[in-house]
Length: 130
Image (cartoon, rainbow, N blue to C red; front, side, top):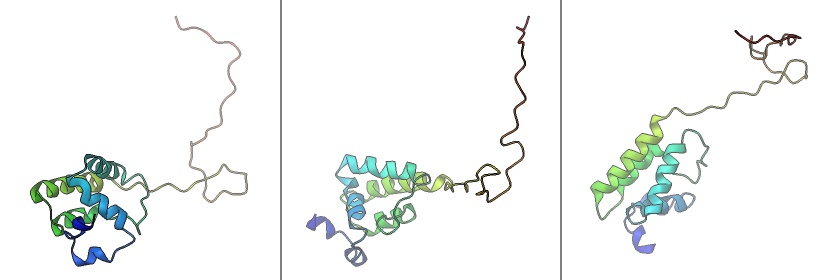
């Protein structure tokens, strides 16, 4: 990996927290599994929480491609453009706050009307449609 890091700008060399993710991004040019991992991250970016301190976010992937040296710079840029477009196109999923049923003492908001309607008793006799 030492030779690969020569392709890095100075600011990359001091970012030890993101080193593993940085090196996986550098590997997209030579390792098909790294490309698959990049696109898995892109597809799940809006749904999963990735650690900010150890992950280079999709908003910086194109900059990453532009500031590193590649054997085929156009191909590397296309990979990162497509991956970042996929990741940033999906709306970020924000989990809704949990609301417990009324009466449990933990309700933080009034239950929405009709969310859990009271069921009418089942009829004693069922008729088949004719």
